[in-house]
Length: 241
Image (tube, rainbow, N blue to C red; front, side):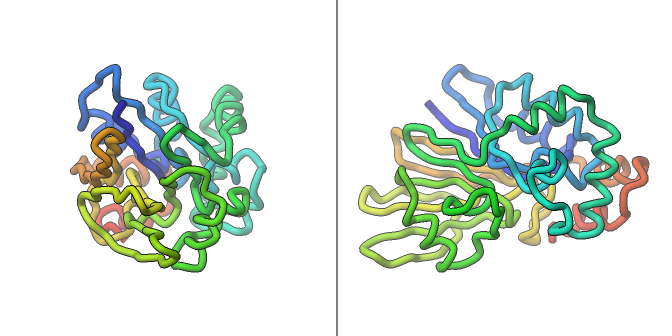
């Protein structure tokens, strides 16, 4: 089994479609999302349709949770709230119900998936340093936890009681270490690289590979403007920040 782990699609159909087309459709490929299917972008329904058509499992992200009433939207920025209010007028009951049934945490044999931190997944805290990483490592039930939320790819490794933070294109997993891997963002990268980002995990080989995919950013921006969403949501796609 090969796992494709992605996150933070944020209704960016152009980026999501490019990612889906970037790897082979084989029986041994399973796709899992670390949340935030919707928000910011102009194609929430289309992105949810792809999730269902491809049989992609997902956890609940903070924007997903805000739309279905599982998180106070006052915690989001004004532009994020504006985008969610617009999104709520685009979706149907089946789309609302789809988001509403998403779990906070997924556990596979080899790893766990959460949007923010594993110790309090319903709080959607940002995992941005060793303090938050330690709290997740303390409750981790497997060797690996895949996360999203920050829109910035990176790795935390716990070994011999110490936590190390680094960023690499490919990680060869050490059997004596535990890992938190932020898979970055498909729909709104914020690490100054505007290409869509995701991970591929090869359990047999013990390898995690970060991949970047170019997509039609100008079309994604135009869709945001046509929808009447804030212009800044389209501009930031160009800069990747």
